[in-house]
Length: 156
Image (cartoon, rainbow, N blue to C red; front, side, top):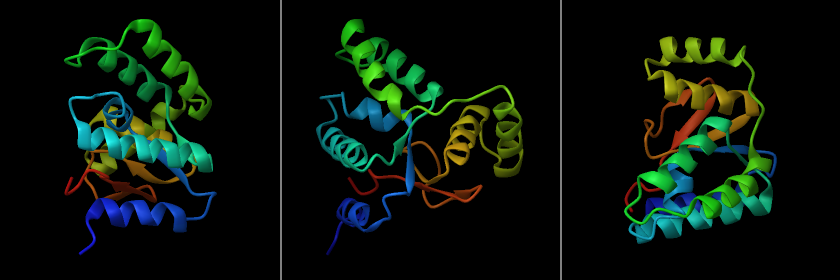
């Protein structure tokens, strides 16, 4: 029997290289959280694949949340200089957002009945042309604005 992770992993190679994948904060955090070994391995593999294909995308919000979490909230926080270097490396995946993007987020918030901050994530994914959002926090299987939410840790 194929696990959800194995199914997800094998699907990465069969998707078109132009498929953009939005990476939520928790994927980045787990890649640097040794306390969550299984999720860390999954996150690192996701990031390797998305870096290789160039399909990964994040928003400024994700980079800000990542920095704050890994320097302040982990049991073993990263040194600020290390976290800053990671953010700099990830910044080339970052889409540009502007105040008008708030209007889209407000619409997503109302239509999908999700929090404003989650709506900002979805709005950024829509703007980036992503077909999927990888997140542990949003509702896996839900499609919002044409973007499918997937939890790569389901069953992990």
